[in-house]
Length: 208
Image (cartoon, rainbow, N blue to C red):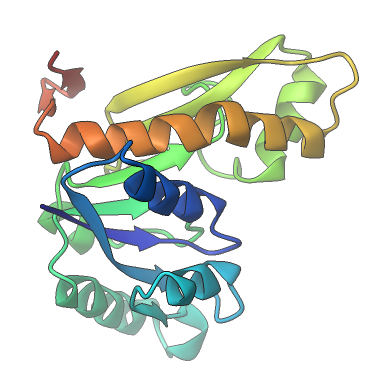
């Protein structure tokens, strides 16, 4: 059984997609053992509570230095003994010590087809605003392992979504969630739970 810890800053729609996928059998041999947020008002914590999953808030704002936060944050993560850590809209920089300890065991969902519209400053609606401003015809989402860079780790899965003429950033964001994010994030977790993903020479390889 793969023990999954989910880190989230906001509403937790991707967390809900994970929970629903476990319930309906799209994810097997995996369970969510905890949810950590940096935002005490994150609705994701309510979702965790409703599902009977331990949840807690650890915010950098409550610590005098980033080093103090990083130490307590890592301690909290370790307490859940996770096999896999999922960043589901988590807007806090992951400490290097945590990346090193959980190498190739942290994954992130990003709302674009990496390497497009990714890196520092590209998150949430900003990604979709940039895509529409550039006039691209296809967007999508990417699940990737987390390394020391920003959205630079090995890519596990991607799914494309067509841009429509009347799209606003909000409409496009919703479609990317529904057609891509909520599909490929659970699929990636299921693949990892069954030992189907390995990293070789900096690339994620999916075994059939």
